[in-house]
Structure formats: structure tokens, C-alpha cells
Amino acid sequence: MKSNSIWNADLGNGSYRNPILYADYSDPDAIRVGEDYFMIASSFCNAPGLPLLHSKDLVNWTVVNYIISEIPEERYKEPVHGCGVWAPAIRYHEGTYFVCFPMPDEGIYMSTATDPFGTWSQPVNIRPGAGWIDPCPFWDDDGKAYLVAGVAKSRIGYKSVLHMVEMQPDGMGLIGEEVKIFDGNENDQETIEGPKMYKRNGWYYIFAPAGGVKVGWQTVLRSRNVFGPYEYKVVMRQGDSTVNGPHQGAWVDTITGEDWFLHFQDVYAAGRITHLQPMSWHEDWPVIGIAKDGNDYGEPVMEYRKPNVGNTAVSVCEPATSDDFAGNQLGLQWQWNANPRKEWYELTGKGLKLNAVSRTTVYGDMPSLLLQKWPAPEFTCVTKLDISNLTDQEEAGVISMGMHYGLVTFRKDKQVLRPYFVTGVQKYGKILPDTTEETEQALPEMDCGQAKEIYVRYTVKQTGTQDLNSKEKDFPLELVTFEYSTDGSNYRKAGEMNAVPGRWVGVKNGVFCTYTGSADKRNVGYVVVDFVLY
Image (cartoon, rainbow, N blue to C red; front, side):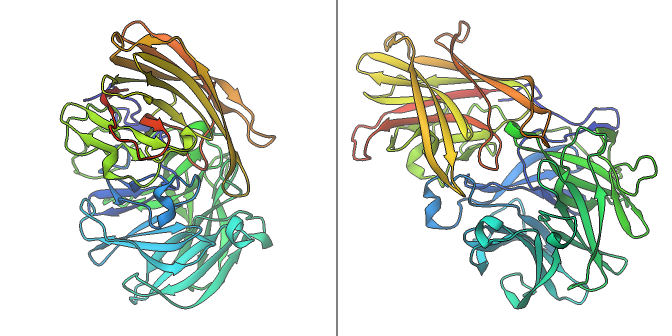
């Protein structure tokens, strides 16, 4: 099933617009191998994890794989919001693709593949322990390998510091002592993080954002020695653009010799969206974006000519959204709220069969939520549910998942179908939610014999802007509206809410099927999701 184009950056006239992806592919890193570009992003506690995107021109992207089918470690059989897989790095060395990713409570992991479209190796924890984040591997000309990484204050007690350590050439372990190579607390580079390492003209470069996700800038360090000392320079600021905190990304080139930079912008509820900037060099320092008025740093562009990729064939495309579930595998747009279990679902060829899963907690902490990212600043998504196979006290519905979440659910009670509109608020402690408060509003009941199919219309509209604090202004304010229908034409409003992102992630929307109580219930029913149409 294909939807109308939700968000495509290719303007069709040789130019593109930013963002190139209006979706939450946060902390992007990317490489070029021949004519192919590969990009990965954070995935936190959602599974499968570490989406792998592919492009031929840096503008048109699709999701082609996931690096890991499950989040390592037992705790992720349940959602651990804000934990899990943070900012990763991808590299290609001597015929092997490497993805290095941090889990801030567990360690630094490495996974490899010779075919990026195939199965990746089981990740190996090459530095067990909490605290290090945002790792990036680097292979030098002499065959030696290194790893640069940042730190998370919430786990280690301090921030704004980058470390370097020698790595085994095969990427599967670390060698020697860790060296502090840069301390942003000693200058004006507080909250420096997300380092990505390169080499050019005998200089070692570390690209690293600083200043904070929403209001920061892009800094570059350079040295003639891997372990420093490093000098630094700010190479991109927001300036007069609307792109706040241009943050954390990847330097890539084209086969024609051009340089480009991928990075993200935090737009609050929709998450961290992906931009593409031209990049140039001045006295062996990069300038990202376009320098104005004689500045030695760049500012983000909103429209620009597309990268020159030579004679490479390019197709206009975007990540998938709509789904009729006609295949034998879930589409790559879908992720679960935690590590999945086979008994949760089945693809029947005529739809997605979601079995009712026991719910012993609040809706937002159900691991069996099937979700996908918001794909645009505004959109409508219609989901058709066949609820005729629900048994007593089972329910199914559509959810909008963030730290403030909302859902419409349809609960079978003998011969009556009872709809409810539910909202939840996660209240966070230092790292994890302390409490979640849910409220439930009953909607007019329906006769089960007359309401076997339900259409849910989920609409996102920007209703204005909001100031998050004195430094963070003019962020989009989105209203999420839930409506439902028995014929797909005449809809009744269930409820609405202002969107709030998840813990470090944008809002996701999706489907669920559940019942309240322990998992020893027999005669489990199910819902069939006929289609999801954006």
C-alpha cells in the first residue's frame, strides 16, 4: 500500500529542501561506500533497534534494515524509556561495516556485517560499564584503531569531556589506557558530545556538537596527534536561520569530490529531524552551511542544489509509512515499545493479527505497542481495525506515544463495545519515570453486532508555537486529535491533546491489543489491523 507523499525533500528541479527527513532519526551518522550512502540513528528502547537507511544522493532515503533485532540485556523485555541504544556510529574498513553504539547503563557495543542489507553480527560489549556514550571508531593509515567517546553526567557524574582509547584493529576490544583529550568545561564548549572522527591532510578531526541539543552549535577539534592536544573552532551556528541547535552528525563526500554534512534539529514533539548542509574548507578548517557577512562559520540552508553524485542513478523516495500488511514480515517503519515476542502477532496475508497481550501496567508501559515515527509536521493517519474476534474484556486501539500520551481503545464487554479516550503523563525522576498518571473518559457504547469494524482517524496539526524556556522559543505546538467511525466516512471525536515528545524521542503512533490481568488467561482473542493509511 502506498500513501500520498508525506514528506519528500527532493524538489524535482535539481534542488532540495531541509529537513531531508521530517522524522525522528536522531543522532545520525553516515558513510559513503562507492555510490551508496548508509545512515544510522538512535533507537533507545524500541526494537528492532538502530535503523539503517540507504540513499544514492543524500536527499532521498529509505529504511533498508535494522542493525539489531533486539536490545541487548534482559531488562529491555519491558520498555525502559530513555535508556537503551543512544547515538551510534557507522564505519567501513577493509570490506567490513562496523556499527558502534552506546547503552549508557551497560557499555559500548560493536556489531559488524559484510553485507549491510543482510544480518548483522550479535553485538559485543567492548567496554562494559556505565557512563561512556556516543562512541566513534577510527582506523589510522598505519592500521592502528582508536575509539573516541563522550560521557553522560547522569551516569558518571560529569559531562562535556571526550576520551580517546586505542582499539583492537578488529574492533572487538580496547587496548591500553583511556586518555581525556578535551574538556569542554575548561572553555566555552560546555555539553560537548557526539564526537565523530576523521583524517584529512595529516590532521585528525573530531566533529562534536556543544551547547545543548536545542540551542547549541557544531564544533570541530583538530590535532596532528591522535591523543592531542586538540585545538577547536565553531564551524556552524544557527545564526539567522530557523534551524535551532544544529547538532551532531556526519561528514560525507561524493564521488565527484564534494563535501556535505548531515545533522539533526530538535523540533520538540516530532523529535530530531535530519538536515543536509553543504560543507567547504578554509585553511584546513571546515565551514558547514553558508558563511555570511565574512563569518568564519556557516549557517544552515533551507534550500540548496542537490549533491553532485555523477552519473549515479537516483530514484525519488522516502521512508515507508502506510501499510496493508500483505507481506510475510512487518514493514521496516514499525518498531515495538520493547523487545518483541513471537506470540504477539501474526501476518495472515489479509492483515496484521495482533493477539491480546496481558496488561498489568499503564498503557504507555506496555511492551507490545507497535509504533512508527511521525513522518511530517502535519498529517492524518487512518487505521482500520477488525474487532470481531475480541473476547470478553479484551480491547484494541490506536495510541499516540510520548511522555504525555493519548489513545482511543475499544473494550468488549459481553455484547457491548465500550470506547474510551485515555491520556497518560509520565513524571520523571533523575533517569526513569517515577510515576505515570492516567485518566480515562468513557465514550458512548456500541452494540458489538453493529460495530465489527472500526476506523480510527489520527490527525496532527500545528496550531502555533510555544516557548519551552527563555532560550528555547518558537517550537511547534501540535494538536493530536482522535476520531472513530464504523463506516470510514462518518467520524465521531474521541478526544484531543497537545503533543509532548517521549524521553529523548519524538512522538510515535501505532496500534495495540490487550486485556487487563495476568497472562494465564485461556481463549485469547485478537484484532486484525486491515490497513494503516497516511
